[in-house]
Image (cartoon, rainbow, N blue to C red):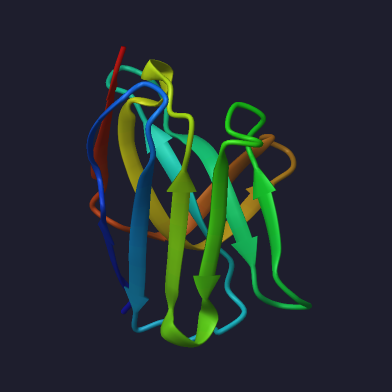
Length: 125
């Protein structure tokens, strides 16, 4: 059973930075993609960033965070990070780390099999 734990959330002023960390212990597939999602109360969870391990590290981002957020990680340590710079109030959300992330073309959405409990990020103006 995969156990996903995030850390690093907090409060920051607009323009500031935060770094989120995630460990997914118990992974059985070293090629499973890992990523970050976020959710605001009353809205659906949305994709933020993805890192792929198989075939070389690749990163994918939601348009809303491109150029500001960077996903990185260490596959051998089952760890991923999300460096968030130039934060905006609209980045305020609960951020979730996920393992075994995959894209559903028919639904045009990203999903995942294993989720963390979430860490809250608050950006004040």
